[in-house]
Length: 114
Image (cartoon, rainbow, N blue to C red; front, side, top):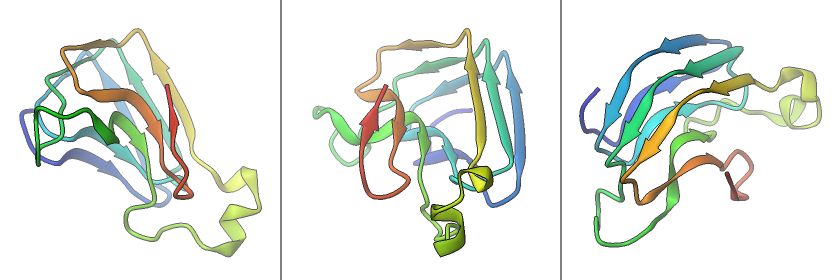
C-alpha cells in the first residue's frame, strides 16, 4: 500500500487480517474504529509514514496504526461498555523511518502513544 492519508480503514463491526504487507507513505497505514470487531496485523512493515501536511515535523496526531473514531462510529452505549470495543493484535511488525508514532489511540480525543 503506497501513500494516502489512511491506507486502510476498519469501521464499525468490521474485521481485518493483515499478514506480510508493506505500508509506505501517508499519515496512517491502518485506521481502526474503536468499535470494529477484530483487527490482526502481523509480520508487516510500516515505512515513511509522516505528517503529509508538513513532512519535516513529527506527526503527533498520527500513528502508523491508530485507533480513532474518525467517522463517529462510537455512541454513548459503546463508550461505557468495554465489550463493544475492538479486539486488536499487533504481532511481529517493523516500523522504520517514520515520523508518525507506531501505534496511537485517539479513540476518545485523548492521545496514547505506543
